[in-house]
Structures are given as C-alpha cells and as structure tokens.
Length: 104
Image (cartoon, rainbow, N blue to C red; front, top):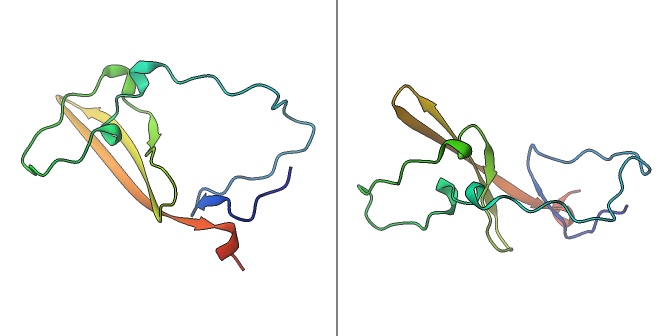
C-alpha cells in the first residue's frame, strides 16, 4: 500500500502503517446508520447567531464526528457532544489539513 502524494492528513491524527497482511480490504466498509448522520456538524450554518439547534438524539452522544465537506479544504472540524445533567455540551475542534506534497 503506497501513500498518494496528494493525500490529505489531519495534523495530530496521522494514520500509522499496518502490516501488509493484517487486513482484507476487498470489501467496502459498512454504511453508517441514518440516525448517526444527523449531528450538529451536519446542520447548515445560520445567519441567526441566537438561534438554537435541535436537541441531539441519544444515539449521537459520546461519538466523535468529522465534518463531511468536499475537498479542497484547509481545515477539518471534529465534533463531540455529551450530556451534562440536563444540558448538552458540544465541543468542536478545528485541525489543519496537511497534504503529503507539503511535507518535507
């Protein structure tokens, strides 16, 4: 398995190389269940800064999500939502995307 020169990598989340014979990549990964696709990162941006977002579904809590946006992009958003008593807290982390051709 060779890394493409233009492959994007999120800083701090580089993928370690696995032994060549350790996985069978003949099948595609399973599809994500539809209820896990409705996350706070998937809601469109609103001009109304005082607007509220809908309450997250219980199945989406305590999962790490990555923003699904088309390339090219210079940053990627990672999101995590958890419950604290009766409130929901969402943390969004923005990380730079580094392309292999930019690495020395």
